[in-house]
Length: 279
Length: 189
Image 1 (cartoon, each protein chain N blue to C red):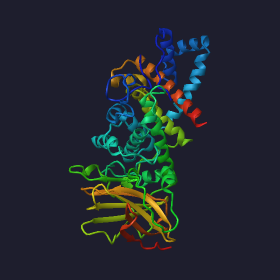
Image 2: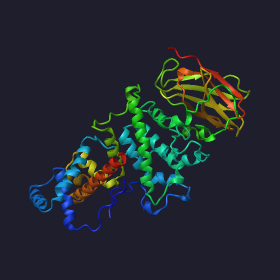
Image 3: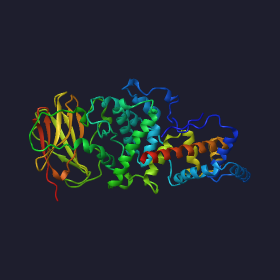
């Protein structure tokens, strides 16, 4: 749509015509105005066409409900301010990919629609993360750091950072939307690693909180299916501050057997075995 | 001159005259764009989705996508405002469709407000966007008269704006909405 600007220099007659049309559409003409308007309509058949056209709009408005005037919160302003900084890293996902967690969300705002926004990301996430690799063969991983849905927690920045979302969904492993804790083993001494999984209709989300991995080193997260297939979930950089990540893999939770965090050379840093989903 | 589908943000000035690319073609000034258009963008999402948290996510997502696509923005083809709304339209539509597909169980106090019943949900999104893109004055007038059902006299008494001015604002607002909805239909085709 092109932003519209009314005609410049419309004469008084045009202005009166427009005024009366608006009044007629709201059934707001006085008796004398009604007479005046009828005379105008008789002289200018385009008025009836305009009434019909704008009447459709009025009809749409009548079923719209209410309009809420809103002002952006300071917190939203902070989140948007962070966009230019967080998204500075080279992007290998294209421009149509939602940053589900690349930039901070507001952890304090109740998510009225539950997982709606997460589900909404499916449309775009799919093609980018669905490149499941067959077999267990390791390869040096091309670290697409931009693909990491991660943020490092800096001093004073905690309120902005991606954290496991509040959830109201509970249930056994595989319950859609429920946060399921998983235990990672094998991580080097000094590495603090906390992980959760969230089952979605479109795949499996891994929620990580990591501290102690070498700053600047790249790591990938791979979700492994019960049949041994590997599903790339994303990558992140070690940081000298705690890193919170959310990464998504195009494999249903019921098909997941483990989650692995790997160094750039492909070696496992930590592995979490995942219990099967009860059928 | 009155900009009907114009800049409704809180910052005065002529956005169209100021390049959004403060750092050249690759430099979207996110902060300035948000200050100028964030309120309208949020208004669109909130009134389309009736979910404040989700709407804020949509606005954030819009700026993320804009930032990533900043090299493709061409000021000769349209304003940054038009560009941001086009991005947000896709974001909101994705969210809307996903929410429609996936019912979620949430406590009653977290349940989003029901969306008004309309024949075509896309029409509602189009109307929400159109209203959001109106200037504050024009939107206020059309909302008061056609959503709240006030008479022009009542609105005039409430706002101090003459009836004739209110009517003219509503007329141009309706025209702009008509054009917006027509453009959307053309795009959808």
